[in-house]
Length: 220
Image 1 (cartoon, rainbow, N blue to C red):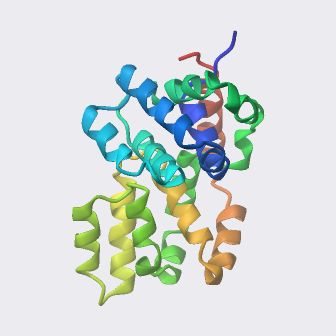
Image 2: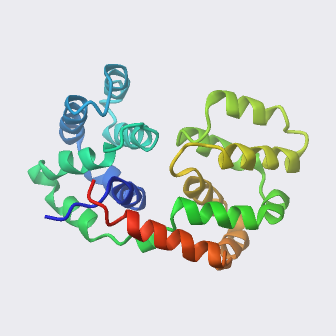
């Protein structure tokens, strides 16, 4: 049986973020956390932190997904998929994950190329103060990153340059996907979103697309 690669599943879980959060109840998330702990995807400290949110399963699920997106475990999302698949009440969700097409969300690699190509436009249009908390919430930025950026709040353009510099050197696998999402959530930046959507990275995009298509077919 063909199994999606961890990278492809991570993209699927990102695209279905709201669906996943809204479909798991307290018992489901508790079972999933236990399974991920047994598979050594989560450590005890992370389990204890997640359990502090047991009265709010939706927030618990958000926090879990954020942890997995920054996890160093190369099979984190494969294990999450198997955890969900073994919950009878979540079979419909499993079907949605199986059928979801990643074409709905551009890859982090392609968005990184687009943000690089539109660098000057971004620094002239984006106010870091509007998006910094979202990027911190999604664990794209660390506390020291946020503190460093806030020191430059008197120079909006320099602050944005610094943010892009941090993201271009970030090891977060979805740093630019989250940046795109943060920008898209700002009503006054919809024209910028259209520019990002329409921007062509040319030959670089073709090369990255071929590489992504190849890696997504590898069975983890």
